[in-house]
Length: 397
Length: 94
Image 1: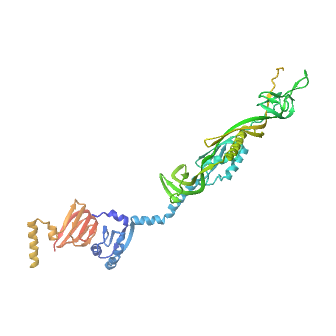
Image 2: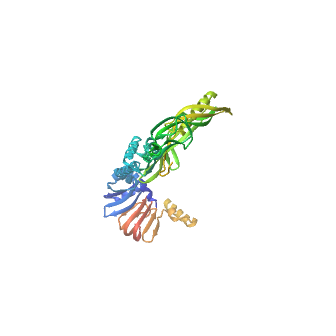
Image 3: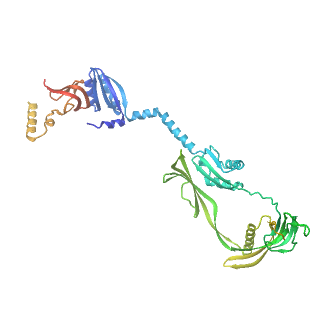
């Protein structure tokens, strides 16, 4: 017996033949090599049988000769299933569109939650987020990663000390720590002004209190500058001394600078490659060919697609190859000294208060050794050296 | 005369050379599985077919199969496989 299930793939038709001389018709079919099976007689003049779809064409001339009538009753098998699928393709297209819509919606930003900020700061953060494109309804794919958002916000908003950005599914959670600027307590209690460091007084501006030092006086740290006790001997009263005392202070800074320095700089040439990563396999989709740069740095940005709450093993990778170059910087000795001085100035500025000014600078020592220039620079700085210090009540002077 | 002579040679050969008779003499080979299947090789065509009776042409005479609920599972020019409930297998010689 033949493997009739094979015919399932080519298609099977159940046919009904009726008329006179059915037996002759069957003999003609078999003799011309057409395979038929499952013949059943229904009554006197009807016969049902199965035939392969591929042999229907050859059936026709034999039917015509025999004088029987043939109808096709049922079509089974793969080609007919395929036909039905095509007919019902709307359903499948719908399912596909549904999945696509879910996929797109899963990759969208649906909410931005900001915790730990007062309404004003929150509003500012939202504005900042709008600026960089983080809005509800945007596709995550085109947005910066959480670290980038974090950087953008902390860089652009002064009110916050730190912000933690976390992406949970379709919602960005922002944890904000606000800067709390302590309010300057109004010092109403009696107080003196004392020196914070050794200095020579150059200027004084006393709002209240009795100055006890003069211009050009040399003061040591902790020395009384402006007394809070005013009035004549025996009739003193304590007030809150207020004012600014500017003194000339001294700083030393030691800097060293190499005459020759090697740098790695980017030439600005870059090549971008785009990949679609499926599991562990990366499929290049744009940017083919080898990178021709001699030396380059690679930057990789990966964006993962998600479906509902799951992360798909599919991600989009953008690789940027930046050409780098080694550059040697050479200074002449004079140039090196200038640069070193500038460095020293910057160094000092970090140490002194903002309202202080550099009055003068003097190179104390300058040596060139092993291709390096060493400088010891002395700076004269004018700054406010006064600090309030409370007068403890009950302690008589 | 010549035909008879040939027939006799064939007969003799099958007897003495142990060749299968259905091959040598164009006889039907009938295989039956209980009452439910009958497999007939070497037939010469279908003469009549209904659900109670199948009549087959042989080289010599006819073969009549009687029973109930006959279905021809396969039919090829010289082979036929019949399914149903077989009651009788009758050789009909004119």
